[in-house]
Image (cartoon, rainbow, N blue to C red; front, top):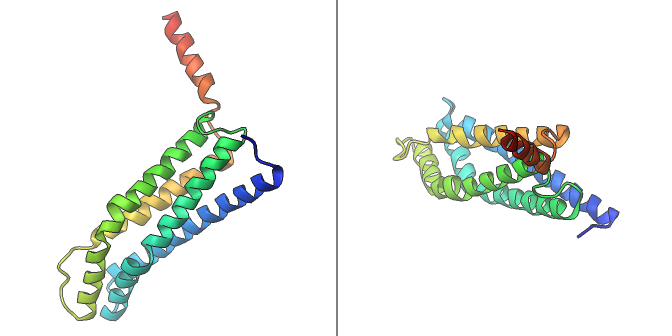
Length: 173
């Protein structure tokens, strides 16, 4: 399958914009977590946690899935392939892993985060410790920065060449 140049550029643009949106949403998550866990006013802390619980996960998941879908299309329809080059294969694994983490690890805890925000606004002690919220934006922003670096530098060469090199080494042993 090959994409016409205009279509390829449109899909590539969609891929870049969705990745940028995903990074932006993760920065927003980091800010909301920072406010929610800070020593600021109860109203600000509670509002930040409630906003995080209510409004962040769905746009993050949508941008992640658009990034994944457009990346798959680019991989299937361009010279880079899905598993032809190591950097593309690694980016694919990173994207799938982060999408799974959003659904499995982040989304299920959001009702408790919202309830913690409500409790803080009411000057009560939350029933749930939400300090775990430091990890999602830290992990995601680190992985997305690494994916960006992979896209720019395209390291490690072709998968087949590496496999052939290993085969030649093993055959010589």
